[in-house]
Image 1: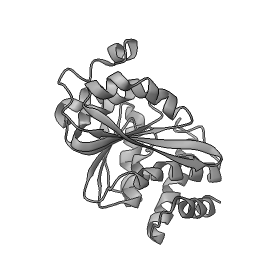
Image 2 (image 1 turned 90 degrees about the horizontal axis):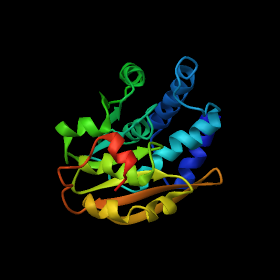
Image 3 (image 1 turned 180 degrees about the vertical axis):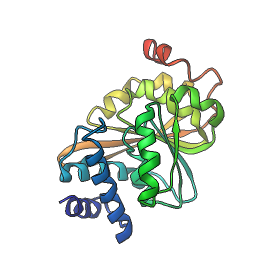
Image 4 (image 1 turned 180 degrees about the horizontal axis):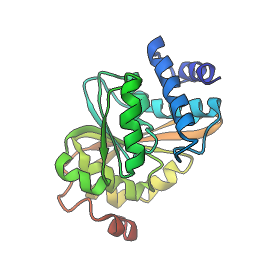
Length: 231
């Protein structure tokens, strides 16, 4: 069921992936469902829903960015989405998975090599790991981590000028974007596009924000401060 749903969805998204990549995507989806029995990775466990709401949703990023030869960081990757499907679909990209939950990251470090997936796993808080990785990625992406006005301060500092933040959002994408005028300006970003993808009757969006100037050094602030007073 997962494979049929994946194949149909790829066709709808206009994406073409080799057989081996499709097999690996499903193998990872199944590994997430199995691990979820002992660790809280996802509330979505039906095979067709995993294909739609995890695998296909993650792959919408491919329609918004040229990943081959580029560096991408997935901030707050959780169970590995969208970063792992992107690493599978585009092995020519260099993918970093970042999350503060050690147990999840340890599992990803163990499972990915067994599936032949190459990605760097970093266990750290987004606002702290940036000290060594500031403006060193072409893309930063994130899904289901925080409202956009908070998320941008956590992701923009990772992106080099000329790169982009790819924020994955649901039906509230434009509403969240409307709150972010100040944050976008202060962080050196510029709105480029809101790409919408209907998946399973629901709206999924990738908000593309181009980095046009360096992010001032005072950002990101401590997380409590970001949450208390978003830019």
